[in-house]
Amino acid sequence: MPKPQKTITTKPKGDIDFEKELWDVANELRGAVAENQYKDYVLSLLFLKHLSERYEIRRQEIQLSFFEPSSDYYNIDKEEQSYVLEDELEYQVKNVYKLPREATWTYLRENAEQDDIKVKVDKAFVLIDEILAQRNPDYKGVLEPIFVKSQLSPTQVAGLINLFSDDKFSEINNPESDIYGRVYEYYIGKFAMAEGSGAGQFFTPGSVVRLLVEMIEPLKGRIMDLACGSGGMFVQSLKFGLAHGGDKNDISIYGQERYEGTLRLCKMNLLLRNLSFDVKLGDSLLQDRFPHLKADYALMNPPFNISNWHPELLPDNDPRLFGPKDSFTTAGNANYMWFQTLWHHLSERGTAGVVMANGAMTTGSAGEKNVREYMIQNGMVDCIVQMPDKLFLTTGIPACLFILSRNRNGRDGEHRKRLNEILFIDARKLGHMVNRRLRVFADTDVARIANTYHQWRNLNGTYADAEGFCKASTLAEVAASNYVLSPGRYVGTEAEETDGVPFEEKMKTLTTELANQFAESALLEKKIRENLAEIGFEL
Image (cartoon, rainbow, N blue to C red):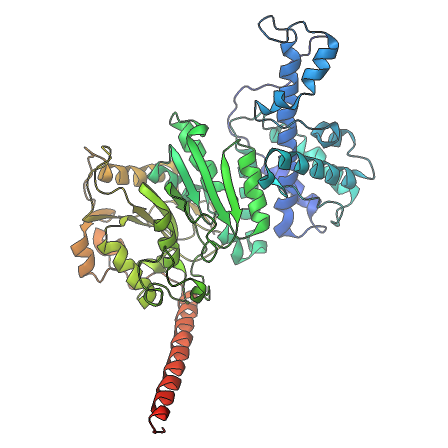
């Protein structure tokens, strides 16, 4: 066997711009696939491509080892070479999946112009899905055969394969670029209106994710996201760890997601990064799939303001609840059930960062305000960040960040005791508009907010209140403000005339609450009439 040549470079490159190519891909799909399904076809193909690249690189490495004097396989005969090349363990040791030729990108590219290319793509998906499931049964169903049943023509599928064969989409040739994540963000952002409001349930803007991760610093331990979507929080946590000298083996990932299609994307995302993970399907509010998990870090962007989520289905002794179910839940809004769920899952040194609707900072609804007062009185709230508008393409609801922590007693040797304080940061004036509809945080904005938080909580920090931007307030000050958590009330900016919640959202919440109160009133009236009838009186 002639000595193989290294044909694929691994030289790090800067980030790449492939917006034109992605728009060309969208044009290939247009008319045959709904816009909100573009990502499913694109990301499935890219997943196969990246697994295939890794397999081909590992196969090259094994072939090269036959000619390296320091290798255990140096100068072995051809029969032994063939055996080693087909040994599954030789690939598994490098976290690579050994693929049959029919499941490789090379094979699909060579057969792209065939009339049965849709059949060949789906067969490749089925083969890879079976291989993944053999390694881990939880990976079953990650890749679904979706091309044959689609309206895509063979010519269109060939166009997709040819477009993605461009070096720009090669993970090996562009190791510094998060190709998979960037493609996902492009399509979910570009076609956000096609996704509808539900898209906000599983897509968090990159700059917001970076801010959360930079604030809570998930370097080592268990990381949890109970509304994990496509896994963006996990991927950003990995990037943060690697950038600070960490090791991916130092983190374990646990997630839950209620939408099966989105969970598949999450598994693909994590598989491509060789991360240790356990992500499950289910509604985290009513079906907690990790009842005994205690996480060191939690990051989450749950769907905002869910009404009619059926708290009556919770057991009365649900361990997540801070108090009686009737007093600590409300059917009109699930926001504060998310907080109780997160708190239940934090370890004794755990910290959580949550993206939440602004209304959560001020709501006077009994079930929600009871939880907020309990959290404040018991020293659970570490920091509140109010963010500017237009950060989210998929929802117009203004958002804020809640940082909750069990690690506020100063006993870990890294952070000071701050049980009697809450840090308020008003970041509404930060960020810049990238177009008429979307604002993003610059790296300097992320650094300013995160550094302010770190200087406040760290031992020997140099924190100081800044008029109009940040203020460390005592719990007594917050109690005196009726437990309202809007930073503008504390940092010295102009008083807010409203809580920032759009009228339509507020009316939806208020009418739901009113309907619930009417129902309770009717039940109470019926009970009183029954009691009076029992003692001989009629109304």
